[in-house]
Length: 242
Length: 344
Figure 1 (cartoon, rainbow over the protein chains, first blue to last red):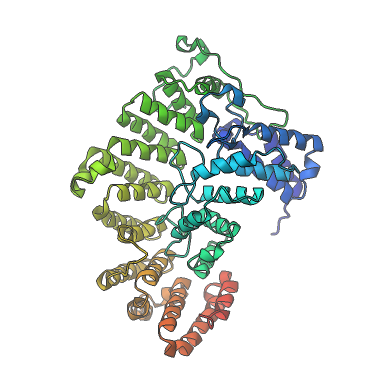
Figure 2: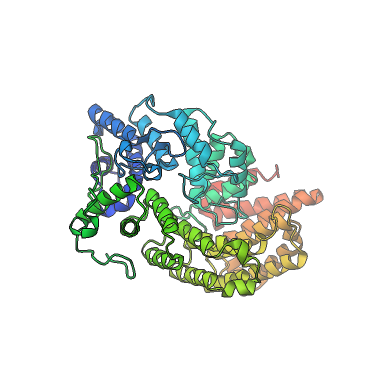
């Protein structure tokens, strides 16, 4: 039985999420920028972004995104994940109002989707922060004060650099070295050396190499290609036997 | 929902009515008109966040701030800035690390897949027992030390709850590497594989247990270790031939660390298995057996060009069979693989 994709219903769903998320979604409070990006990507993919959102609404959303930009220099610069920490001027404890790489990436993508020209983006502040977030091993932490680090944030850094057309924030050699170490015995790519091959990290690793124009660094491209293809069984899974 | 053992008990009484908080004016959250994906906060969360914003804005260091971060994290463990704040509070207040670990345990049960929890745990454990000190004693002494014993038990429980919890296995690798707990790891892996032969996390851990303690880019696996792994894999293939994990493991292991043994040792063993009446049908039907043959012939062909023509012919036939019968869903791939045989 073939069921038609109800495009209107899907567009309505994304609009609904942009308007309000239920209280159960509180776990996304620090990631609203990314949820918003996904809604906009959904609408754009359906070709309905400019129909569903009026010019005024889009302009207001652009303003809201810019309100999440941390204006100071240093490692905290970039975009926040949401408005939960109030206006910047009220905050003397910098980590409270910290940007993070994932939110910066989502913000830039969202601005572009909403038709903004990025003229209000403090490019130098973002790239300056990015330099401080890259570890010696080549990977990135998302914000100061954490030891969380993995290919998701390498990807965010590469995507940001690509959008801003400026790679001064990324040591490409170091990032490439780290990613190459993430290639696993089965051809897959991992979060860190020796961890389990994982579809999400595969994307982040390969996309980062591609953006850096270092795809040749992949140790066994054919094996990686095969690993990726074989995530399709009936549907798709992210790990072997998952 | 109240987590047992957590610090706050007066859940029903709002902060505004508590004497302890009278000096604080909560800071409201500001939203512009174009607010994107606003969340319909509960009144409780809204109030907690109002007070949290007030104390975080000035970086207050106090027990009440610590308690407040616990309540917020229990609602939303994805608050990346709150974790940074809490870490600082725990350090500056010189909180009892073991108690903090207790609290992390409780939260982990509710949020087993939250990234920040595991990283917070890492920083607590290294504070509790610095790796440089731990490495001064023997591995036996390390495993029986209360700090590490507790972590291993915690991991047992987490993996028992969800045998493929990605964060648990990552944390386990961190623990084993940082505290050099190599000797016990292979036994643990063996137990997990025998519990579920399809658990790819366990098979991956096997590679970790054998290789991670060496410099893998230069390791040529000793013949007896490679043979032993081949036997181990064959025994587990017998349990479920149509299982990607052991096939990927053994071909990947040998390809990287003993390539010639792909055809000198693995090939005869799997052919023997395929000829065995008890396993013949299952082996013929599984794409992983045929795919392994292709990988083996590719290596053999590279090492022995005199055999290339014959191996390409055989491989070509295998690709056709996979595309048309054994693995139809990937037929496009197998047709592609066939065209690239000559260029190997």
